[in-house]
Amino acid sequence: MKQKQNWKQFALVCMCILFGNALLAFGVAAFILPNDILSDGTTGIGIALHHMFPGFDTAIAILILNIFLLLIGLLVLGKKFFLTTIAGSILYPLFLAGFERIPNIGMLTDDPTLAAIAAGLVMGVGMGLTMRVGSSTGGMDIVALIAHRWFGVPISLMVNILGVAVIGAQAFWYPQKALLGFLVLILESILIEQVIIVGKAQVQLFVVSDHYDEIREALLRSLNAGVTMTMIETGHLEKKQQGVLCVLHPRKLHNATELIRKIDPEAFVTVTKIREVHGRGFIEE
Image 1 (cartoon, helix red, strand yellow):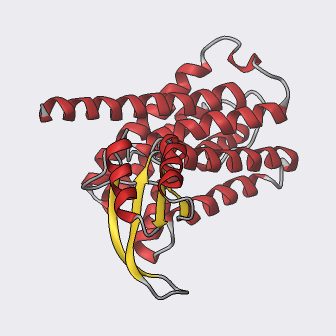
Image 2 (tube, helix red, strand yellow):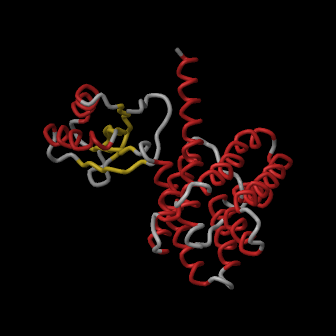
């Protein structure tokens, strides 16, 4: 049973890596390249090289850069990193080369602003899927990881700095296209974060009530929710009693608050959004 579950998990990881890299490549081929929008990372460097040397294929440039950075990552970050990143580093430029050869793929829109918005959304979802399963598309992410290891710079900060630097370096020649590139970068960042946490977010209830035993039983039996009891002391009355801590899926929030209100209309309840929950006693729904 456990082996079957491991295979399912492995298949899910492979699907996310494949689909994520395909989406990323599609966004570049369908929206970035046809509208000459500047991009960050190795994609941006590849596009810049293509403009400097028109006969130089963008996908090949990205593949060469990714392999070069991947080898540096192997030397600095180790074999484990190399194995988890090699798929994205090679799949993305291969998908891009394939999409570029599809006739009229760049005819989806001729509005550069709309193309930038679409690119940011599609590429953000693609990168989010790969990062959600612990993989990476390689490229400049490797530079960020090395900077983090050597100098302690936060990875997310370094990724954004590199992205701004690559687009900014091209802004001297293409200022308007650089603005669209920054729009893509902002949308990418938002979508990546949302895709990584989607389905993992939960809500946490903390209840202070004299009827804590009844509330605990109701949450356990009626909603099948996990409950933790914690000793507290009220501030005004300085009364020692137990507080009820409960983490549950957002769709159960309304039923939980209704249950609590029926048991004790004067119960003090706080609701907090939790980005991610895992560990003993918690079952994903």
